[in-house]
Length: 196
Length: 437
Image 1: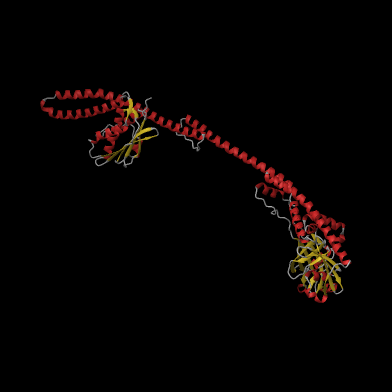
Image 2: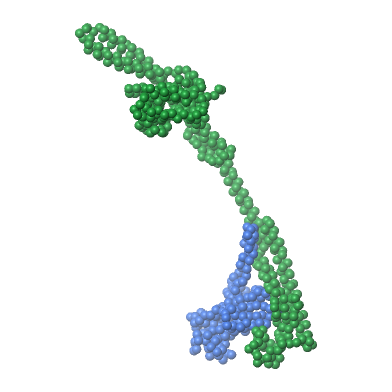
């Protein structure tokens, strides 16, 4: 289930949810347990927004910040919370994606399709199984947001008063980048071990 | 405005940069695709040597080879070499990988990517701005600011010009209403400042003239009173004196001793009254003025040497200005004034005292100061110093300073009290310059 928190997108999202009831369910989390870690997965989740893809095609890198929260019940007591960052880039000539993690200890992967890059990023988001209840269900929520690398208006500084005024008055009002939220649950650890 | 123009030109350049960078990327991509096809053809024709990487040596594989192996792909093209000057073709061959490489000549694909990224960043920064709105608003703000500053400047100038004029108008109204003490506080050396200064000078002169006029009017009243009183007293004193002498003459010889003694007392008092009557007559008289050229230094020296003989125990000091201009006044009256001031000073200073006489020029006037080392004057005495009074002290009638100031005013000058330099009283006599005209 996906909740778009950006106010400007709230109405279109509500309309979309009314018209395509199955769409929301299609982006639910599909975690799986492997070893002593729980991997997040969401096969149909599209991380990269249009703006992110535009920036990538402009040769820039795009970083997504993720916050994984595990709770005993929906909106219940939080058992653990983890923050991760995925860095995407785009090979202009091969037109393929590359994804890496900002946190150390992860290898990058290149020559990926968009969906492969997104899946690889999501599957690298880990939750230690030790914090999960063995005999009870739990909920996982994944909040993610593209880091804002848009110009802050200081890119072209001017020393003259007209220049400074043009800088100030020409700035467009920027909408804050939305925080997307995907929730799933209740999951049981025994079921997740079998899922793989 | 120049800056706005430059910004506008920059805006136009950014649009060109947008088109140019997009075109550059298309060209680069086509070039890359052609290089890929060429490399593939060369591999197919077997004309290109390859580099083998065996699975058993996977620990020594370069990163891009290992990455390819782990990807599971059958083949892959990748940019390699310094600055992206080489195109590599990875092919999976059983338990190993073959890598074919082909140089891209002078083309540096990584450098091209970097330049494209920088160009797109500039374009994006420009697209994040509404430069048309920025220019328009800036122009409006600048015009409004110039207009506002001009308006404030005009208000300031108008106020700067009109305020002193309003003060002048108000001051003139006050002056016309008789409040001659009115003055205007204004600075500046422009026409307005000069007008204000002239107003203040005129008001001060008017105030001084009014004071003199009032004083002369009072003196005139006192003169009339003195004249009347002197006349009446003189009419009475003569019969009294004659009658007393007649009474004495008709007394028998045996009683004459007592009567002579009584008659001497009465006659003495009558003579005293007659002296006062003469002083009143002198005070009330108005002899004709004879203004002329007078050297005040000489007058002071002459009076001091004249009076010094009568006050040998007084130390006289003179501080006389060199090249002192001549004054215009009645010489006899000036002598009378100086005599009065020096006599009063000597009496106040007493034996062993000091008298200082100074001359100088100030405000186009010749001035004489007489200082004494006496006890000075009380505040009450200062208030009524120049008013005529009747005194019964041994010397003087109490009219000297009144007559002196009246004479000074009639000569076109003035006599006033000032702070003494010797601890006692001090007076300053001011007289106008002498002029042939």
